[in-house]
Length: 233
Image (cartoon, rainbow, N blue to C red; front, side):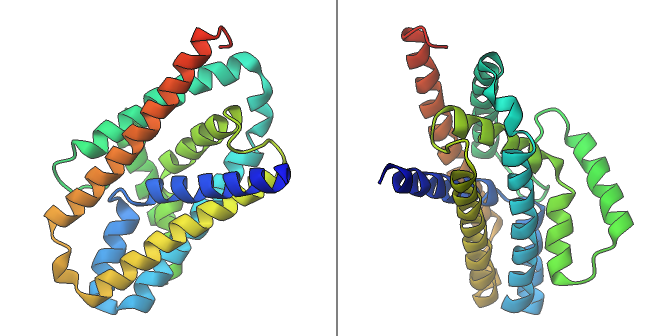
């Protein structure tokens, strides 16, 4: 029974985090909105599918390739503090966004670096199909991997995702479901009526994502404060 509860908790954590990361208006969302209006639901959905697959790959790398670093007590404490600051930064950034014309970058001080990496990957791979367009757009955003590494450390240190393969698989599956559901819903909505997606509507979506991240950051900050009060951190 306890194992089943842990799986459900890990899956729900994956769904919520997948949605929070997918909603901000970045390169993939803008591509789905523009291409969906011109080419219809199927093309936009395939872009979202490609983006979701790469998102899951990044998430899997974060939970498996870096999991050995999360067992150290001091590293865990440092990652908890850093994740609080990073999620708080993203929440404020999305909440105060004033335009959706520029892609959203996740690295706090590395947007120029991100742009150069994106440019080079796009030039080398030249995606032509809808699936590869979404796949490469996510691949070319290294901030996504950084975000998942931070979240993976946070989730495991708080016990939301147990450090075993069934729980990690449940979380990754939840991420796939959350990102896939968002991109599918966005593709369907865009194919029905692109005119409804004004800049004001897109900004509201991004602001709501910022509110969600701020709530997550405050909850995480409260958890850190509680640990400090109990002399556990």
